[in-house]
Image (cartoon, rainbow, N blue to C red; front, side, top):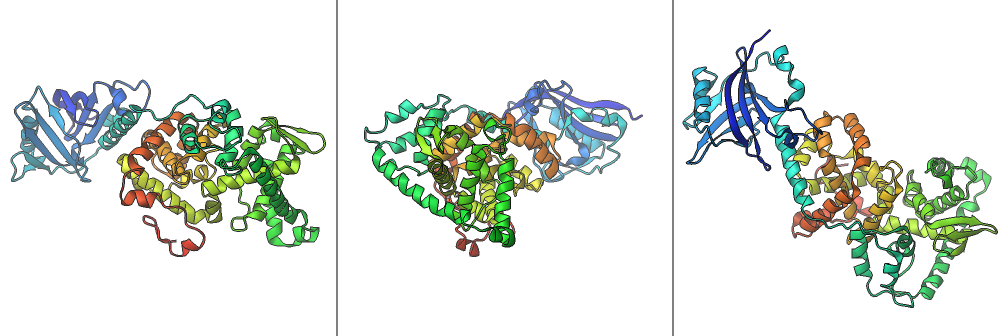
Length: 529
């Protein structure tokens, strides 16, 4: 068994990070092998783990060091390390034992583990790697953290602390009465921009959503009176009937023999059967909610010839149907929760145009049309946002080969509807800000960047970077995130980064290409498709 001994022990040393760490620096000897160990006074600062062990420490082998430099001034001395992979660690500051760095360098030169340079304060390590897997060293391995990991985690904590100092999101929801007070008696509104700003920061209660979401999603026009909107909606119902008639008029031979039609009908049929079946409204196969959802999706698939129907679209409208409908009544009537009575066809038309509003407002119609190409377009912009505010996360994404964000695209495509363990209230609050955002196409990009920032400690400490582990950690952690913290970080990133002038702003703010624009689009970061 190799004997362990302390070669040097420097107490009251500060590791000069964004959040300075005070602790004790050791040079430990294991036979003829050496490693540096730094034990912080407060281990909570270097790990996201709750109640971490007091034995937790930062460790790096002497063989991992390429260069050591001592810096001397009148009040303190410090020592800096450059690792063999060219990582430059923050300095260790010695405020009480100012001769510590000098003695350490003299020792390494004496042992011939280092050679001098032309600068008397710099030495180069010559010791080569030995048996670093000895049992005596491995006994404490579970308490050992790589210094690069510690540096990046503390930088992350500083970034999060800076975001936490300001709050741009209010938890006091806007009521329907508050919204109606901003409308004129005839139904027009001169304060719609102000309303959107309020919704973005505060969110809405359910009654307020019933009133304002149709305006946000362009089913109604805030410039028109109530009567004018009713007339305009009647025209929308007529248009909806045209799309519905197209799939209703298909004969059995078309449904059974034409591959594209058979596939179109089959995908919707199967998707509807899987959508939100845990909810009582969708539980029974003969549920009128399921039938209405199916009709809306069939009509949208006929209406949007570019995308047709793509699996998952139903998730964007199914919770809204539940939010709005109070009950199905006799004689093909539907009562909404705001008291309005509609025919079933009018209700179908209403939710059809709600779905179309979501698709157009957020450019999801374009995303569903070219899913693979749009994944590249969207994800590289999200990575650029991350690079502007959180360089440790950007480095981790590149190093682990996850900078295509493949593990998050499904969540992004479905507007995070499936990610909160059935707590639809969280999804609806997020959608409040999405629908009311100043730039509804860009804000979801910022929102996903914020989610990844909050997930970063789990990626760093609980995965090896492989896609399987990353997806498992994401699935387990995502539902526990605080949506108000996500929204607050998102709002601040939008305020601080995206409102600055420059190339990044212009590039990140680009709209999704139309179908014809893909012919000329060249990815900035990813291989040409």
